[in-house]
Image 1 (cartoon, rainbow, N blue to C red):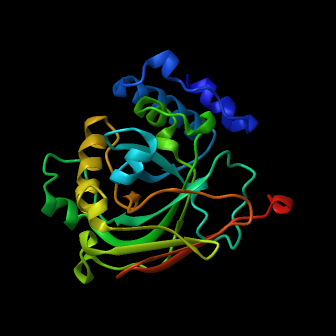
Image 2: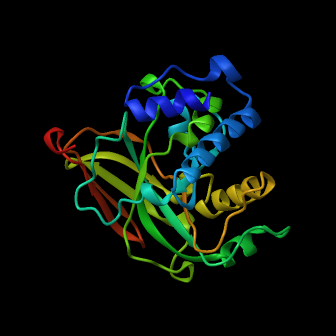
Amino acid sequence: MAHRLDHAQRTGVPCAPVRDLIGATDVELAYQVQRVGVRRRIDAGERVAGHKIGLTAPVVQRQLGVDQPDFGVLFDTMDVSDLDVIPTGGLLQPRVEAEIAFRLGADLDGPDLSPAAVRAAVRHAEAAIEIVDSRIAGWDISIADTIADNASSGLFVLSGRPVPLSDFEPADVVMRMTVDGAAASAGTGRDCLGDPLAALAWLARAARDRGDPLRAGQVVLSGALGRMVPVGPGARVHAEISSLGPVGAVFAGKEDS
């Protein structure tokens, strides 16, 4: 199963869903497949940079026909925040989401993962664009497919403008995103599991219970605040998240990908 997904990434040719091998709802087995893929990347020299939470917004769950969140692992090679133009050659079927990124200042590995403890562990937040991608043809995914595929991870862009939680409430933010100047997505912090901090708490418990707890210094992409939007070569994405400011991404054209 992991080989099928890895082969799709290496060849640039999306593959058939893996639910024919693991079933559409076997979440635990899907996370085992994900761990095989994560280990392959670590063995190849990539470094874990954090985690992402997927399928947090009801509109995204409806888009993909799933009914629960999931999570995946972020690697240092996924962070394209410093690039003026994002290469598209390594992307198969990219889509974009705007969300809040949390930078952790403390580990979240103990028994106390209360809202207060989770909030206290956050060093700061910033606006982010996640470039989600699927190795599975046509985004024809069940919950097991996307979990096995590292929660459909691709790349991410951070705004570089850190804001402490003392300055704003994540649940109260308002997000608007445009693609090529046209309105593409909108939402609020409450569209992310009711509160992006609640999403972070969910992830902290899920990651701890699977033996891979969140660590100080890691970044957490807390989940989409609105619908995800397909993008192609040359696309220009701009998002505004109130209290956090703007974040943008420019994709290379076909001739530069």
